[in-house]
Image 1: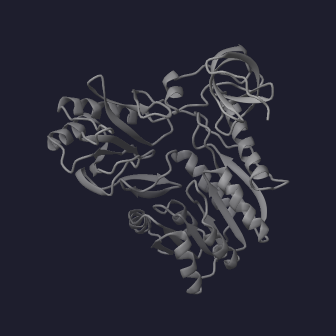
Image 2 (image 1 turned 90 degrees about the vertical axis):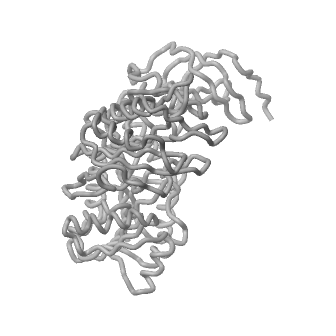
Image 3 (image 1 turned 120 degrees about the vertical axis):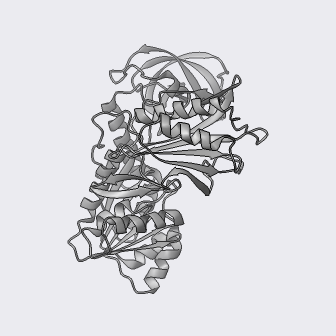
Length: 454
């Protein structure tokens, strides 16, 4: 075995030959790869060795000696430290090409597809201020109540006031809530001893309505001066539709607990998607980039190619965003979701939009689909939009036995999507195309719509 002779803190010079799936530059020195965040292919760089492993190492970018044409000036240095904008040094056109390549390589390498038609990534006109939701930790820094983000690979809070990728109204609301918490001497959460009162501030905003939902995530069931805090929030921040206290005393990284108390207004805020109105509750999922989510769902509808007579499956339906759009073009839609609160909201949303040809049911996809199959429900088209881990194998096998003529796979993880599509391909489905959509500019994340036909 070849001896690795690099040492920590050693400064080296090399050329960036590639990017990792997370967008870090790959610098090979004597055939040994170092992963260097902030470096771009073709650049000659000076790097400082941080960690040396058996097959690869990590290094910090010290200096760019020869710049890539794709390099742009960074908007937010803090955004690199906390990991919110790790691709901001790359021009937006280059980001879109990188994401197309990311999806393509996942389908070739992990999906074992020799030929795959991956379209150019659909991007945004203005790839900033797109997020409609923020989940911001509250901690004590130098004795002050601070909001911000954790430094990468740590739980050390870096105070941040402008996130650049969130709507400005959300950034402003967080700072105002932080100042109100300071005014009433609310004690921030301490992870070490599991003490303190306030853990997170969550702000959700309607892209079309401008309505704000402000959620105070607490470590205690009651918060001192909560009536005064609520009054000040509503008085000082415009368009507050809802203020909610969410109780979460569990140790770990899960942000929201299950227990919500409405302090002001309604237990939801309202927004629109593809011309339909949706109520969104504290714990229910709604895509964080509304305009790009609309693009994504339009592509899913296009792939489904409904004529009006079909029975359609919508697995992992959330609050019904895709289900209700599908229902306008199908005879019947059956939709499932494991989060009961989301199904409750989905039923309300169907009623609010006057849509009555959707059957919603709470439960896991691998339990509900076999049940519907046993009841004799046959699907012409299946739309799946699973979490990052992809589809459960039992679900895939049941869906294959259902034999729908079209499967539309909406994915937030090209790797698990490619893996699942291989299973469908092995069962006789043809992969027609993959269309990437950029819902998360300045980050390495990418969504895509895949069309499979029998």
